[in-house]
Length: 350
Image 1 (tube, rainbow, N blue to C red):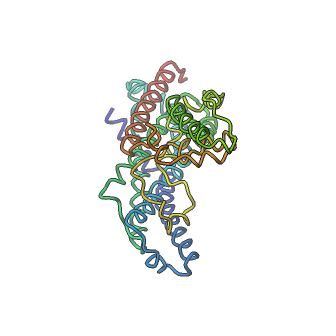
Image 2: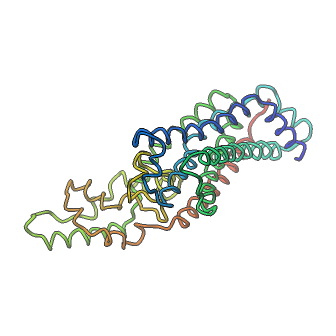
Image 3: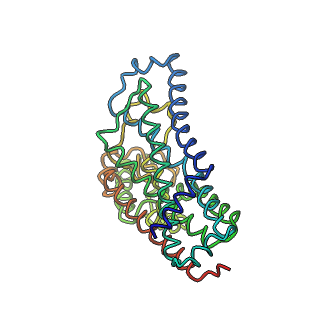
């Protein structure tokens, strides 16, 4: 097994492609910071405008997190290209057959590939974060990682990327065609946006709806002059909910919506509401958006926001959200690894 790992790492380090990806992982956060500074400069006419904005510590943390968390959007395509293209050569060049002939088991061959590819993902993430910190250090924004807590938050994103890497490894070992594996990997990455919208749009459960509907209907009773109809709980549980809610519960699709800044970078400054979040607002219930969209009724906004937030599950501590996503990443990583190996174990290598 050790010899296999040495061989895989040697091949990776000899690959020109990996060094191109390392360079990209270093350049992208720098460009992101430059773009951030450019926007700030346009807002105020010069970069020194940051000093005039009276940014709070929380504002600065959010700007740091905006740059660092972007790795979750920037790196997946690189991983989707590298893993299938690199491992796909094993079939073409006969490496897998040679390894098995040399006495290594299929589990050892598969494990060595998975371990080294996950290492690549970790290395690219490290390079990205390192250069993001360096780039921020040369700006008036400066670096504030919230005492290292931000790195723990970033670990949740990276762990999800590692699970995705194991999926791409499985595809690469099961599908002999490198082009086919690459296409499937890229389709998976590009489809994440659709699943993210679907899952985060239906992240409410029946108890939350029941409590919300009670609040809304109380407002209807207290304001008969508006002549609004009461809400029906069943209206919330349509086909979309039965598809989107399981996706929200079982996968990491909603992770970027919940842990990454979702507004334009120009809104990160001079806005009292744009603070480094300590809690996650479940998208469906923040500011009673669900009722407003479902009923086309602006009366939804007449409900006191504190009453909305008092519904159990509407706001969740970031630490709890991180734990949820970490557990799902670990579970899916195991499923991808075990499933890929189970198929590879029966595959005809000749």
